[in-house]
Amino acid sequence: MEHDILNKIKCVSDIKKLNIEQLCGLCDELRDEIIEKVSETGGHLASNLGAVELTVALHYVFDSPDEPIIWDVGHQCYAHKILTGRDITGIRTEGGLSGFPKSSESEHDLFVAGHASTSISAALGIAEAKKISGSEKSVVAVVGDGACSGGMIFEAMNNAGRSRTNLVVVLNDNEMSISPNVGAMAKYLADIRSREGYFHFKDALEHTLLKIPFIGKSIFGILRSIKTFFKDVFYSSNTFEHFGFTYLGPADGHDIAVLIRTFRRAKQIKKPVLVHINTVKGRGYDPAEKNPSKFHGVAPFYKESGELKNESKYSFSSAFGNILCELAEKDDKICAITAAMTDGTGLKEFSKKYPERFFDVGIAEEHAMTFAAGLAAGGMKPVFSVYSTFLQRAYDQILHDASIEPKHVVLGIDRAGIVGGDGETHQGTFDVPILTTIPGVTIYSPADYKELEKDMKNAFSAKGVQAVRYPRDFEKTIPEKFFKNYEDFDFFEGKNDCIIIAYGRLFVEASFAAEETESSVLKIGKIFPLEHEMIEIVKKYKNVFFFEESVENGSIAEHFGNLLLKSGYDGNYKIHCVSGFVPHMEVKNAMKLHGLDREAMINAVKEALK
Image (cartoon, rainbow, N blue to C red):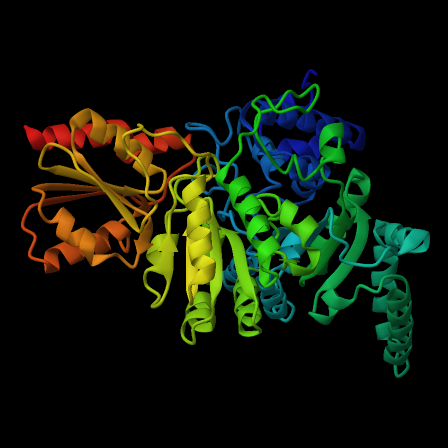
């Protein structure tokens, strides 16, 4: 498909020169470009295809970057990136664009967004800053319906509704039904209410009535009450207006003309407005429309068929889900909780087998953690399966609700360590430092599926908060001589005065490095709290190297070093950890960049032996 219209967009303001027919053609070309490029690199497809008309209409009506668009999560921002002059070739790969909004990429991205439910809070702050500086420019927040399951959205709306700022919130409703099905009459009324003539008439009538002496205000009040009554009957969606927002919609999110009229009206109102639009995930690409969950975050695929280019391997997530099902079959107190990540965390089979013990709480990690503590208090054995990056949101709940008066909650921490294409916002390099600050927490980090099973059994048979963390990866083989006892730690003695310490998937790299350099290896299974017996083994070595997929401050390596120091160790102790935020790139390249790969381990030992 030739991109005749898209190629003429040299700056985002060029969109305003197009007529409706050309805008529709532009949407077709944007979809083609997104499908083409995401098929090569993988990425978020279904949500981006559903937001194309929305994006074009927003840039047609509003003046970015002076009127910034703040995207919630960013799963919908690919068309926005293209229209603001960015080439999405190689998106989410090293040297390519981030898959999320990123201010270092463009002045049109004012706020990074990798976690859900943040857009309204951020947009309100920006809007208040504009108001203080004397600007009447609008600020737009685009939020998906799924993000509305997060409490932060409602905290922000409660604050924003009384703010009198020029804030426009666009609710992109593409799956979850926020309102009941309102039928043909409501759609007809929504279309009428989105027409400029209707708004001009409404404004003129209000202005005229209020000028009539004595009775004008009374007549206006009566008419407004009648309008409110019919809105309640036909829409049943005044929750937003109770927060102080003017509600517009629901509008067809794939009708450019309707969207432009509605956004123009929202821009005129000069107070917080919520525009509710209905869209279809995967719009314009049949495989994604039929299976939007599969094409939410997808690996490279053949665009003609939608089939993945590389067959998915049995992963730690899959193993976790299967092991949990086996344990739940024998123990009817085991429950599973997810925060809108049933497929991603491997819980799909559990949800089918044990629906009465499965809970998807939506994008609400804070609630999920306290809910888990409540289940535990009620005598159940809950496991909260969550990505490492999203566990960060539940720190207070782990500390206050699950640890002070210890509740037996198991955390299945998926995507632990470096994750690759999702970049800075999704790296799992902070859960260890977070959890090690909380008294009573036990952490396991298995190197393979058999150890994962053992760790999960240990976690369910123990007390207090038990965390089992594993990578976005599949198990890898190690040299045969490194047998595994799957104890809290395993020690493999070498022939020189160097020892490598590692856990999780880094133990695989450490085992090969130790074999080549004839060094010793300490594999830690239960990584926190640390067993003092390990310190007695390690302190005998002149050179100690600890390799870990975590930021150093609060890492296991740091804790281990402190114990060594207290034991009187006076040798060379070197920590190799992640430095700062890790940008999007392949995992193997990130490992090499941060000195965590096999080659770095071998070089560290060889340098010490010189």
